[in-house]
Image 1 (cartoon, rainbow, N blue to C red):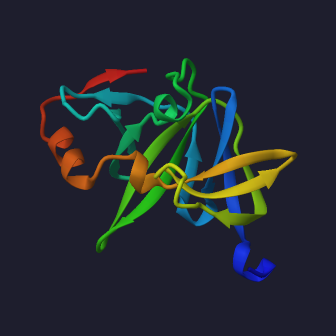
Image 2: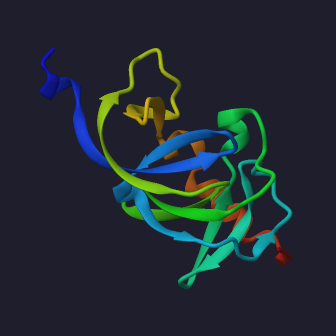
Length: 158
């Protein structure tokens, strides 16, 4: 396999979840926002902590840290608001992150058959091998999100 076939240079955003760094393709990022009021609802979707209101949208907050690192985030420094193309719609999801985010350009190595479904690709940065995340494998499908929006009045938490 040639280098051209094996690597794909792309812009990515590095994010920190606890002690580990992960990446998302830059074209998936809508914005990085300071922690804001999270509205919590009675619901059964364990991947969703609640919702935030952003630019006239109700955006589900999905803390993926426990699935990826084995530990829940104890502090939230930012929300990384990402977009997902699901069929004809473009959904937003807010991922809590515990540290700074960084925009980089890196050569991506595609995920292999033996990699976990949440790994879209791999990149190397500052001597560290970093997983590029596949959000579709980490966040609930829109039908599960709809049940959250219709489950009653929000209880706000800071």
